[in-house]
Image (tube, rainbow, N blue to C red; front, top):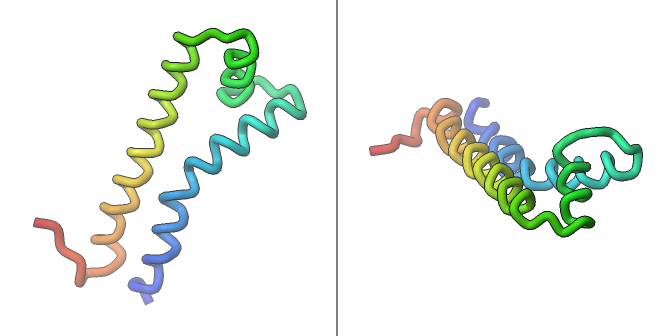
Length: 83
């Protein structure tokens, strides 16, 4: 049954990007302080250095989530081995 987790791991690994997009929308609507609201505010006032920094942070978190999904493949299914 552990090998049935592979599609779930794949979905969860790739959904981190959608999580950041949803956070920006929800934080803007309800005026909650957070990374999404900070991104939207920076875009509205055209603060380009801040936007570049936030883009790097979001890109690194997406890369880390994908790496974590790949590593958890080997833990979930013993047939998968990395050299």
